[in-house]
Amino acid sequence: DEVTLRSNRRDLQQILLRQRVLKDVKDISTETELFGMRCSLPAVLAPVGLSGLNARRGEVQAALAAEGRQVPFVLSTMSVCGIQEVSEAVSNPVWFQLYMVKDRHFMIDLLNRVKQTGSEVLIVTVDLPKMGTRYRDFRSGLTGCTDFSCRLWRLWQILSRPRWIWDVGVMGGPHTLGNVTPLLGSDTGLEDFLDWTSKNFDPSATWNDLAFVRDNWPGKIVIKGILDPEDAKQAARCEVDGIVVSNHGGRQLDGVPSTVKALPAIVDTLGGALKILVDGGIRSGLDIIRMLALGADGVLIGRPWAYALGSKGEQGVRDVLGLLQEELNIAMALTGHNMIDTIDRKVLVE
Image 1 (cartoon, rainbow, N blue to C red):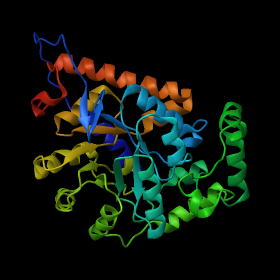
Image 2 (image 1 turned 120 degrees about the horizontal axis):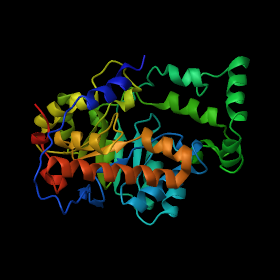
Image 3 (image 1 turned 90 degrees about the horizontal axis):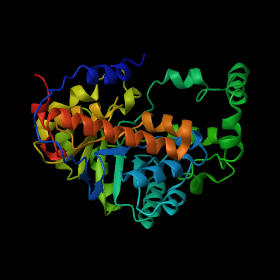
């Protein structure tokens, strides 16, 4: 029913900011540091699966936009463009997102390929032991499209978008999952890739399996998918470098709290023990300052950059990041803050 999707936005918008006046806000900096990277603003392009279908070699374009705006880009395991292709297109290493899958040999091989690119930050998504109930994907024809009427509906969607046909359908190939291709082969169709993916999420994975990840990854590890303070404490005990407070954009367990509702208790529980990122419903610089005020060190954005990529490619993603930075700058000025580090809960109306 997408209840959580709506609550992510609604709950954020209901958080009120304190406007302060006659503060010296002549010199404002939105810069911050996230896991060793100096960023122009406390935002990260979240991993979005299949974003290479939004525009021609979409993940490459998004990574270039992120580098141009000096923010991190996280490549999804389920990306169209593989880690080698994306890393060769940019100067700085990209971050990488990993799922816990049953095939541990595949995970080792994938992590070795990621390490070879110089990547230093691994985002491990832990809220996918099973695929959530995503009726939107069925209605759109992305998944479960087996009968004739569904295939006809999918064909109509394609034919009604001639620009997409040329940009992605004709010029945007190969239409595979680049990170999985070494395992399944380049001649495997997209539906076969998606079927392999859905069957290989590991429902038996536990906190103990993070030791396997650590044994095969020398860089920083960030756990994505934390919504409960008890899980946050467990992550700290596993000696990871950070967490992402996330409900998967409302696409996993519908009916869980919005991330902005879950964030304060997690921040209070950890007491600064880990770096905390958060995603879910963030659409503006105002949303960023709200999350920072509640204790986050930075935010991940997903849908905004994916939509922008589909609309205007690399330039669209650059534009979205530019808007977020300008909106954050204005919000800091009108709440009386010059630096990201000074933003705390005093920014908020009780």
